[in-house]
Image (tube, rainbow, N blue to C red):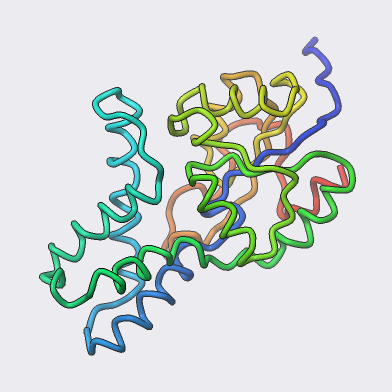
Length: 237
């Protein structure tokens, strides 16, 4: 008979894709800048290509081949590479490149996120457990009215998910045991890593995170502790 898990005292969340729509947010900022420069480049395609450099950049740090750098820096390095690939390096001033990089601070929450988090906050601690830096998470929360109790994640551990340190140091930072905390994500791989660390898990599908043709994370791939359709459903549990 499986052990009865304790009532959750905290819920920690993946952010990019789970709480906010990174693709449309980045595309909106890029579209604005492209129009100003008369650049005929699909902003959603550009956002996808920028995001595609995300995991390889973090893997250099996870593997120990590079020291920790905040995601803001990695995003900027990836942006510079992408602009060079499109022969657009000289099309933007340094100030404009900085503004482009701030696209990641201006991502709209999914329609259920703010209300659901507000309800959940009444019964438990809520916090991001993201690969984003504290600075990035703070500005994103201000932009989207995300009502966090605190900010956890990569910068707490000086490493990136799915490295176990990120989950365990985030849990330790709020003085709880892993089995008292639920990791909430739209990505099965994130939940796999969290469960391996002893956390409870909740899966929420975001079927348009990667656009209308999305083919991954459309459904749970394991028996997670909670499988929900909205963030608010966790408060109901």
